[in-house]
View (cartoon, rainbow over the protein chains, first blue to last red):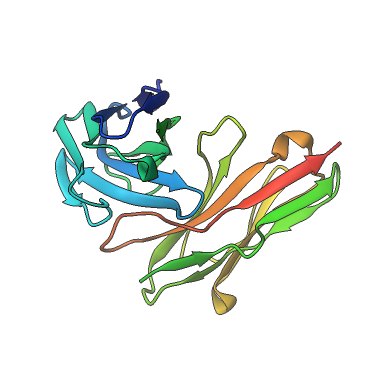
Length: 114
Length: 115
């Protein structure tokens, strides 16, 4: 079975540009999570969805960040406009339906904003 | 609020040595899950183990073992006879069983196994 798929794997962009990160969860998983990893703050949850509905977005840093999940097999995290402090690795994770246990992580997208 | 502390920022040992990674957590809830994840140099996060707060039995999986002690709020991870391939950053995490579904991670311990 394919794991969580994220694209792109690496993104380099200039300050002020719009950035869109994409995630395809594991088929059948009904919960999807976006995390950000930085040296200063470690791994922190940005937002999570349950059955395509955003449940907790308290970790979203500011209005420049937005996330959507139009269907069960796709989610996006958008940053507009991007800033150098947004440089980080962004992970998407999904969790199996009917289980409250482990989350399975994608390979991450390394974002660099210059 | 929940908090996970991994006091050891970096550990370096020689291959075949045993090594223990410490994890201390804080929560007022009585029901929760504890996890360990491995992040190898390639960057992905690999799930290693989950324990729930009802089960304090220690667990062994090959060279890996975990010691869960509610009395000290600790969930330590031991690698026996370490190998170079064990080199990675290891994260301990906590999630409540009821309520907030997010994983709260520790800062991670960078483990380097030298040949």
